[in-house]
Image (cartoon, rainbow, N blue to C red; front, side, top):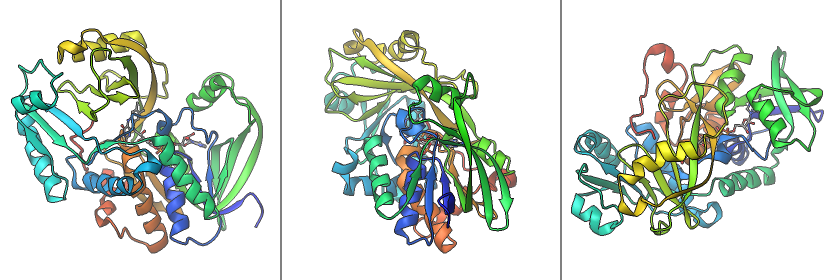
Length: 405
Ligand SMILES: Cc1cc2nc3c(=O)[nH]c(=O)nc-3n(C[C@H](O)[C@H](O)[C@H](O)COP(=O)(O)OP(=O)(O)OC[C@H]3O[C@@H](n4cnc5c(N)ncnc54)[C@H](O)[C@@H]3O)c2cc1C
């Protein structure tokens, strides 16, 4: 087999592609496995730009199961993947408290119990939350927490490499054609020393793309694990998908009057979420007026002032002196029902994408599940994942996730 020939090629070397690769190799997939990306470092990948939150506090059973299995893995490898079971604390208005009831029952049935706190319990446990007149209480899921996405990606990749998976860098897939034995992919080739601006031009399809050559890669099977670019990849293979890239911003702030370090993720009633980041705080918010597209511009101080501080100011007197330090923007890959697409797209094409803001936390179980499908023909560990095939958008069997932040 030539060096440009693979049995399985995964397009996308983020957390999801790396997890699929590790699991395929572990399950003893025969033949040569490759993971291809234009930038394995991942400067603009969502795996590099996320908030590191992990939770099974979802409304849909399949999302709870995907996260639960992943978190059980994080618990076992806590040191290697930087996992801390510091919990998710959801502050609730009376209406949110009622609306969460059904999800809490589903979570509890699936082995993911949350504590319900009234306002006085909340104030005694988290004294800095002292503006509580709009609250009915809070839910605290103590096995949810935080992990280090870089360590997790490294873990997946090291295990994959040690089982023979090859990682191909500096190649961007631009076209595909069917061959007798699978697919031939056309790729743009880039130099090692790409600048951040050049990388941004490539992923946003703007400016000058510094191509140095082209390459054809042959493969029998393809996995699309291309994050926010998956819809355009699926189109190259002749499949229409409705998922869209959407900008999401997070910022780092100096929280000089509060020590956040003993806490995990806190989700305010406004939708602002925050957690400790070394000795500072990290906060994010899904602004509602985003238009889909490959946008990485960060709004800076105005994002912090208008979307974060204005809301946190209303939650604590200790948040009156917060100070913006820095921040960034990355992409969510949003599916129509905000649940991932995992499945077989026909011929020798598989897909695993559109995690809609929860792909880091679900990457372990998603990779295992797709690898099970590819090697054994079915989802063994979590059979419910069969419902995540893209076919659901044609048949109207959407799996609308209500707990998205
Ligand atoms: C601000 C923000 C906060 C988030 N917070 C959380 C959180 O707290 N918890 C959580 O679980 N999730 C969170 N997420 C979501 C999470 O980061 C993603 O769901 C997850 O990283 C998706 O991983 P991936 O491997 O599918 O995609 P990516 O990491 O984006 O990887 C896809 C890769 O495909 C490559 N690629 C694409 N097209 C091509 C092509 N044509 N040729 C070659 N390579 C290609 C890209 O270069 C990229 O490296 C957040 C996301 C953002 C933006």
